[in-house]
Amino acid sequence: MNARTHIRSLALAIAVAAAVLALADGRPEPATVSLVSGGLTADLQARHAWNLQRISWEGVEVCTPTGAYGTLLCVPAAGGWIGGAHTEGGVEEIENATLSVDGEVADLTDGAVYPGERIELTKLSMLDLVQLDAQLILEDGRLTQRCEITATEDVVVSVVYPFMFCVSAQATQWLAVTGDGEELSGDFTGESGLEWHEGWQWTAAFIPEQRTGFLMRHVTAPEGARMLTGWWDTQRYRKLYVKLETEEDPWPEGLSLAAEVVVVCFQAPPATWQDAARAVAAGLVVE
Image: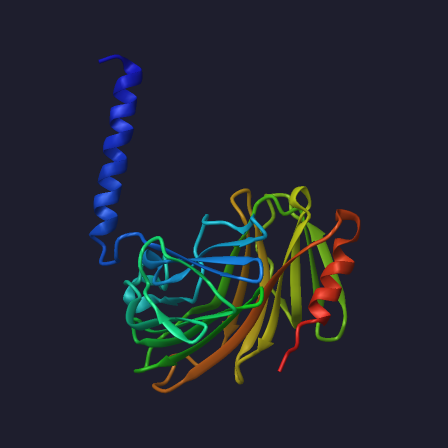
């Protein structure tokens, strides 16, 4: 066996071993379901507790399968992070997940593609001692995500990320607007750290090569909690985080936090993408 063949054999053995270990961690085997409405395609991943894996707009991959999506908690007593793709603190246990397409129940089966006017996934799951009630609604090109987390017993939760999005590393610029109308903007370099901002009403990123933008707008914020938004700029992705902070420590049984965001994508010339983002954001009706 020559060196090259040996390296290939070793790589294959490592990959197989990793797959076996992955399937032994309590999560289901990989399976993907695609939802399509109004030019936007959202891929859901069974292995990540039916959270997002990818978002495409008119055939352009805007959010990539390069990291975790969904709701994520850090529960120190359980071992750390739990939710979706993260399992350091245990596996997210789904109690019920239902998909409906234009009012008709649809199967969550590997490889299924569902086009429709209104597609809704509802999910009830447990993140250690915290219950997650989540909705994902895709309608006419708008992706709405809602989550409510409730402590079922007294529990210490050190960090809460209700929403996360892995925007393509091809995005080069970002824009954000606060509730007071103040604008902030910057360039992605692939080497910036994560900075938190309070009061952002919406934020957007732009992929100039594809002339495509991504925009997330806050719809509702929880009472009794501080909401922060931030971009983590790495070479792997432009990771958008929403974070909730509460002074409760530990969380008492029954404590509940709820939030909602809406995501849209758009096309625009690179020179005027920020104007397009402002127009798109203004067109989103926030109830």
